[in-house]
Length: 297
Image 1 (cartoon, rainbow, N blue to C red):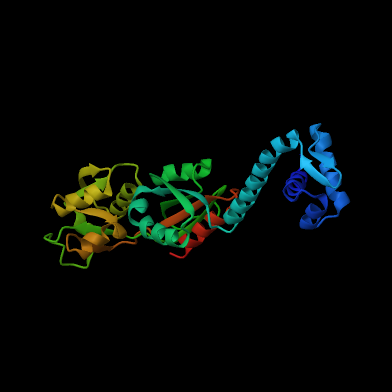
Image 2: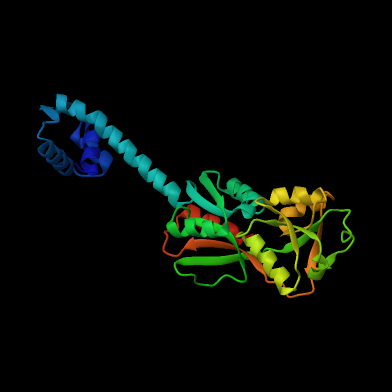
């Protein structure tokens, strides 16, 4: 069965006339008659009784009519849905993000994106940057946000990477700390300070170790935690200092609960917020809209 045959059949049934149906379909009457004849031949059933100049549905025709109307409605709905998808008004985007970025960078971006694209469904998976990269490579997520040390390579195998900007790391201290009145601090001033750090293997821990090693500072890690939020609370409580992303402590700094000091004294490796996607993955209109939204940040 072809859609044009079903459309002709439904139109003839509704109009009870081959002539009127032909006019509505912008076809000749013989063309409509041929389509109905072809449909009847394929089904092996007579669909209309020709009673002089009038026609009426046979039992087979009455049975087919409901199904044919349903098929045509579904076809229209499918076409409408695809048009909406192509226009970027509906769809789904699976996003992967390093936990810190998901907590402190994504919320305002997603808020604006949702306001501009309310019909697009979003899903988010978080984890270490290395895990997010794996999710992008395996196609589990459409796009990933991670942190890297240094500028991302223009080509990374099958991955395309684009920097969204610098991911600055600062020294976070409580307001009563001896360094709290300074705007900057040298890395060597961390000597002997109780250091609160993320667990080994995280990008933030690796970065902190590089910074301290390059400055020749043997810092004393007195506590390991697996959450930036937990580290912030511990620093507020006066249990130590920590190297944390500036964006992660912006609220606490504004409220006077933490002080952020810019590190000086040695060339610091730049960390970047990077968007990753597969080069060979089809970019739907919703995905293109999200890529555009990230590039506008």
